[in-house]
Image (tube, rainbow, N blue to C red; front, side):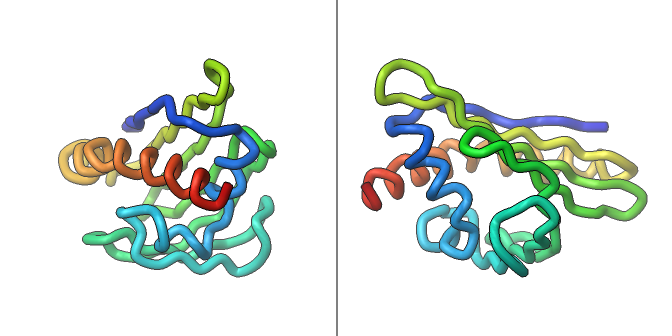
Amino acid sequence: MYEFGAQQEIEGEVEQLWAVWTDLPRFPEWDPREQETRPAGPFAEGTTVWSKQKGNPGGESTITRVEAPRRWTAESPLPAGKLVIDHELQPAAAGRVLARKHYEVHGPLSIVFRLWYGPRVRRALAASFTALEHEAARRG
């Protein structure tokens, strides 16, 4: 298994940020990494989502856990393994929230993620967290 992720303290309220982070069809409007996101139903455990990040192939994931308004998890199948992505919001100082995204890669493709995908995602997550902050403020 290979795991990586990032966290960033951003401005906003947990509920505001949650509303943006779980509005999957609108991800490409604000997240600089997202090219397309198509959920097959409402934001809930068991819903499948097809998504494509810029520069990567698209794929399907399933929402496996929702703990509103703090945490949600999605899992994607990989050959002989899986990718688990955990999204978390925790209150910090007044008007601030710690946004966290954690990735776990299980199976033989973990080496590819360690060498290629992981470093690219880690570099891009700060811009995604900042974009989340700005979109939540914009929607106010």
